[in-house]
Length: 84
Image (tube, rainbow, N blue to C red; front, side):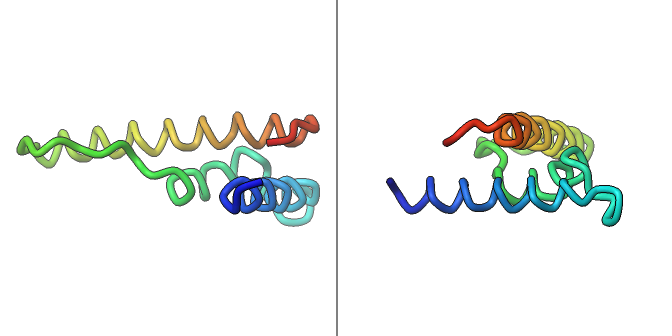
């Protein structure tokens, strides 16, 4: 098993463990995905074209929402017992 798979498995297990104590720490899987999604999953590489600030903000917002959704999907799978 590769080191990356081991690290991701450990990270997901840890995040699910934190979510098990949601009543005490207010960290649901959704909250954890929102906080860690943009950190764990990098956005797609941007082309070399010049973008306005509005375009950069819009694409950054879309990226963060997508990263959160992707991580949320993986955390839900892990919570249901899926192995990676």
